[in-house]
Length: 261
Ligand SMILES: Cc1cc2nc3c(=O)[nH]c(=O)nc-3n(C[C@H](O)[C@H](O)[C@H](O)COP(=O)(O)OP(=O)(O)OC[C@H]3O[C@@H](n4cnc5c(N)ncnc54)[C@H](O)[C@@H]3O)c2cc1C
Ligand code: FES
Image (cartoon, rainbow, N blue to C red; front, side):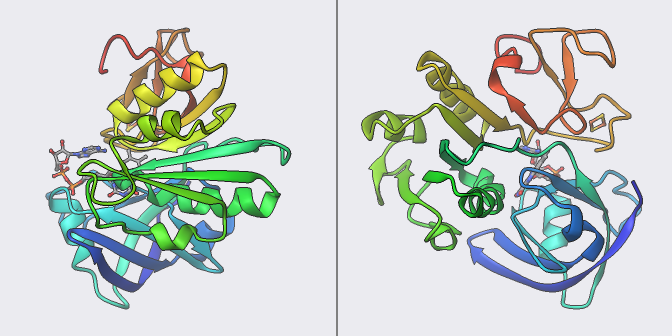
């Protein structure tokens, strides 16, 4: 994989501390699959490690990213201007698997895990899948919700109860009796754990994207390992590298009980 120069087309704040960035990155957009991410490098040599951000959408030669300011790297990205150059690597990771078009899919995004579900929802819709789209927010700042319109039936849960279901996405899925034969999700780890347990208890399969801390982003440092139930072919221990074997996993291969979890 090669480092590439991408060009910033636009950056807009779409909710408090949440930014929508459009990059012109033709070689990435040509290959990107839903659930993959790109690594963006800082211009400040004091910050060597890249910041991984999921691909939210792809339009022609353009890649859309939506991110929340968490620290130095994301703040630097939020301050980019039209025409700025950014060094990027990608697309990285496995992405969501292909799902037969006769399957109804429950697509679940929580918080800053919502962005990658947009590209996935569009691709599944174009594939002919019927979709239930479950979006979990902290409050009434429903960033990206309208972008899902037309792809399936949309359900909203908010932590503070200001819009939609009062509670978390698992509670909503249970209350609405949504099918969980096939679930694709991204969000905070407690949400993914709860959703995986509910899906597996009901005989379904959950493909979950782990947006955990990373370092190199290219499989070299083991800074992103997650515990698995079986040993892996790379290090022969019960570990998987999120950046290389993930970030999307069938929840059944993960061990939520030990290690970094
Ligand atoms: C595969 C993948 C995809 C991602 N996609 C997105 C995305 O689409 N949009 C988005 O907003 N963020 C996404 N993230 C998280 C994003 O990479 C981090 O928020 C970012 O790297 C933080 O860098 P920083 O320099 O701004 O903050 P730092 O100064 O490095 O950290 C600030 C704070 O954020 C915490 N933090 C750092 N990285 C993470 C992380 N990965 N998860 C949770 N907390 C973290 C730190 O512990 C610290 O408390 C993704 C992460 C991964 C691994
Ligand atoms: S971040 Fe270095 S191996 Fe995954």
